[in-house]
View (cartoon, rainbow, N blue to C red):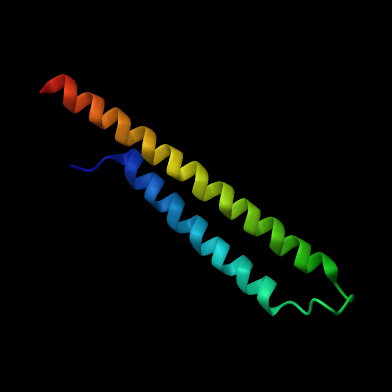
Length: 77
């Protein structure tokens, strides 16, 4: 039996981790001592923060779905 909320939460975590990986790669490859375009580095830091928020929100969805499923199983048993 598939539970949509758990699937969506899992996909959200995966996408968040992928986005975090891309942002970290941008930060790592940035020429930090070159002041030609500091906004690229700032943008990558913001993207990393967004990815962190996405993962945290998806984890909360997963926990909530798990709690609801546990409650439903307790009531049926």
